[in-house]
Image 1 (cartoon, rainbow, N blue to C red):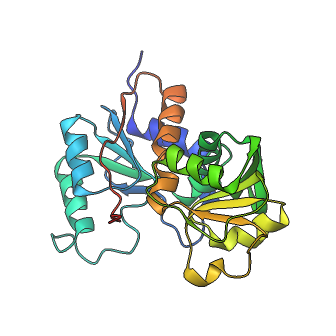
Image 2 (image 1 turned 60 degrees about the horizontal axis):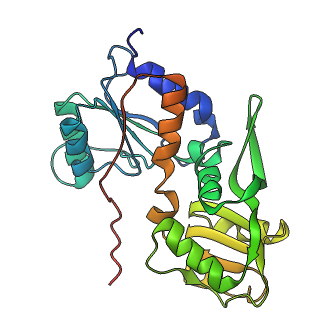
Length: 266
């Protein structure tokens, strides 16, 4: 089997989730390092890039980190040690590690982040709802809706979410007094899709975070379930792994063991 370059891994990821699928405010793609001239020694797959994650890559002898959230989101005016982003960039460069991020392009891709969330919940026939966009012959969207195998009471639905996503608490509006069957999902910050979820016939809307005032006015209309930004997207690294293993066989893939969630529940 021939050697695989970092660029070949990046190409496989971007064929699955083309960069034009990302939102205009995003910064997906190459963050740090070189891709064309380096053979990949291993890929560490994660949600966020922190110094601890770069240390993990070094320990595993991985010269590629694939993250969901971009390490560099706002332009850097200098690279020193003033904050966690700068320190992670310096450490990656020092250890010759490339960092690539697949963010809203992977959110919006068929089979991407939201499809993985739907899979974990056991939703049947997942499909996009709300606004969609097309890149070539690929249609993408920010949210997915599907159907549970068996309807659940609101109480049982919350229990399922806690178990599936290892959630310590779910923020919810008034519990529905009818069963939940159709479920809409949007990983991360998905409140912008709430009205679309209702229009699509969702009994429940699951997302990572919402603001206080966005909960108002939907009592007994739809079950809102907010499980945490990190918790909603934590399985994204499994999507990365499956893509790389399918298209770049032989590349060692490691799911990061670092819990990068900055929020602690007391």
